Image (cartoon, rainbow, N blue to C red; front, side):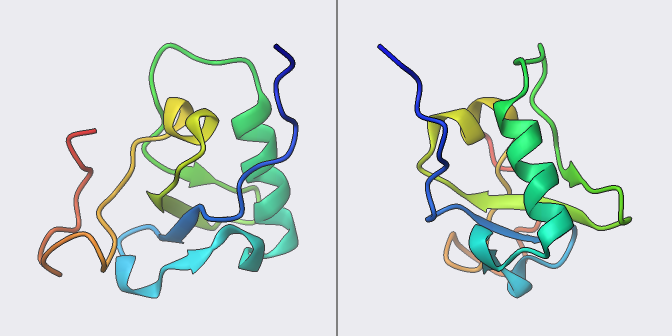
Length: 93
């Protein structure tokens, strides 16, 4: 089966440590979107990454995704829709 090259638009991210500022992936700045796509489509590493680090200096947490490639690559962090606002750390996923 051929792997899809497009990513699902329902993935949400937030600036690291600021899950209340969650946005959809298509709203990322252009450089961060390129970094996100490159990280997801790159060869799989042993460990999942805690954050997406962009060369512009921004760091993003993945707060939600239904894309298996994103979930294989990154640890998800609880966003505002995932429980109490006090839960800002990585999820058990």
